[in-house]
Image (cartoon, rainbow, N blue to C red; front, side):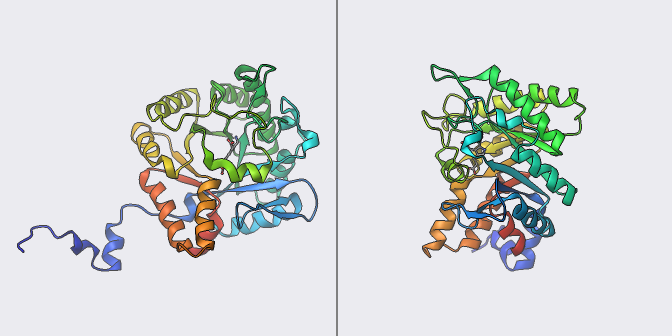
Amino acid sequence: MQLTHRPRRLRRNANIRSLVSETSLAVSDLIYPMFVMEGNQTTEQVSSMPGCFRYSLDILLKEVEEVAKLGIPAIALFPAIDPSKKDNEGTEAYNPNGLVQRTVSAIKKAIPELLIFTDVALDPFTTHGHDGILSEDGVILNDETVAVLQKMAVSQAEAGADFVAPSDMMDGRIGAIRQALDSHGFEQVGILAYSAKYASAYYGPFRDALGSAPKSGDKKTYQMDPANRREALKEVELDIKEGADIVMVKPALAYLDVISLIKAHTTVPVAAYNVSGEYAMIKSAAQMGWIDEEKVMLETLLSMKRAGADMILTYFARQVAKLL
Ligand code: PBG
């Protein structure tokens, strides 16, 4: 054949392929989500997330040291709260001596340079498991919830969080939290906004990990409809106007088109959350011997980078760091 272009010329060997590769995955792109619980010297395996554990604070501190040594720049912290501390309004969320607040200040004391992202949403703290305050007629109250989220974010900043990460999907919370942080002197604390967060079945294992599954109903009146794409842009635009430093798409794998769309329409960094269900699918298929775990893991995370993610929250972070 007389071919002007033979694309295979650029795939001939590993060195050529490395010169022309468009995307790469690095440890410096990763944020590692970790679960903390009350107690001493306790580690509990999360059954639907092999390789992920709930740690008591003393053990978590040792684990976090290893995470930092691996070169992972940041962790995202999620608490498993004792049921006796939960109520309808999630008041434990802004207890200055709460589990998250104590954990953040202990980590900051031990490893100041490791970045800590704290989750801002009420679900680990409410008896009903919703991200906001539940009214008697079953409605999640927006503005009342935002007032609690402001206090929660400020208490996390006081403890030393570098970024607060509102994952609740209430309207107007980014602007309200920005204002609360600034008025308390935390203008250097950033906001990673879960802007396009979908009402997804992929969060199941995470809710097992925290015992935070909603006791009634679902989250469809605040999290987004998986059918929607343009609405993600609207949420992102609002969050950026209100002061988001970084915007996020969640879940990642079934929403690569949304990551790509948002990347093309914004100038702030874009994060993707490789969520618990995505992690569990790879782990379980690998345990069955049906897929090559490491290759599928790396290919999956690379696809998120290729779609446009600047950073990825992933339970695979430690495994990736050991490999790369
Ligand atoms: C809570 C929150 C959830 C996740 C992160 N923050 C669950 C939910 O919205 O129900 C899910 C993370 C994962 O599945 O890995 N606001």
